Image (cartoon, rainbow, N blue to C red; front, side):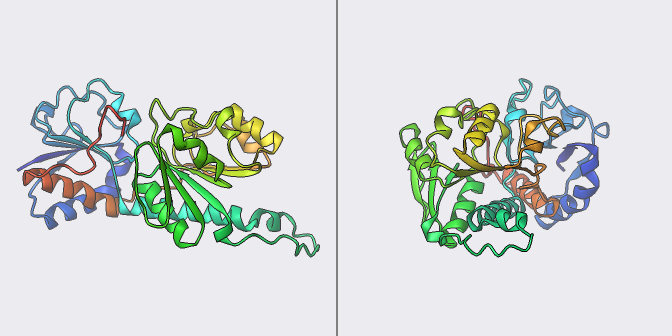
Length: 312
């Protein structure tokens, strides 16, 4: 009978306990779900993990076959030198749906010029504010993993001219896919609206610096629900002041919560959302965790295994 340790913050346990038990039972897995202090580390077979819980040293978990992350991003986890066990990241259908909805909503907000109408509720009939059709608007998605690909497909279904860019070649119906450093300038040049959905790696930190912000069409809109480190904050503020970037909607930041004194809060052309674009939903994430445990018990490869050399 496998021992499974819920090594995530205590506040998450009530939301996950019932769903994990149900999903494990549905797959015929008779397991013991434990919390820190209830089981000896050397007897644990799997850890369900998120930073901020009681576990920070993985060394005692000598029998553990995998660490199953509840987070989509794993840069804070792979930086732990004691983690030598296989690590999987969370690819949750509910998380993906939430991200697609956030991206689609904010792309449409920018495309339709909704902010101008909201600001103009003063009795003036501004019927000169007419957006182009979606097929006339270029949207670029940087990052074509599970989240970026899903968002790109939805935007293409709405008839936007979608360009996708990734480090390695991808193919997505309805999306012009570019890849590699040499094609990044072309992807940026098409980005009237730019969506950042890249992971954090040494290559992506400060990717959107002053030089690359200057490659965007004048007056571009930036949406960042990916990683706060993707944007050079000082360069973005400078680009907003010159009008090179017309507006930025940011969901992720280098420091979270975003400090009250940060200039993003008061900037008239920046919208801050508090890291809500994609939340892991226990009801669906529990199934992802249980499926991976079932696969491992059956001798099948783990899904969503992290490549530590690539960082995701």
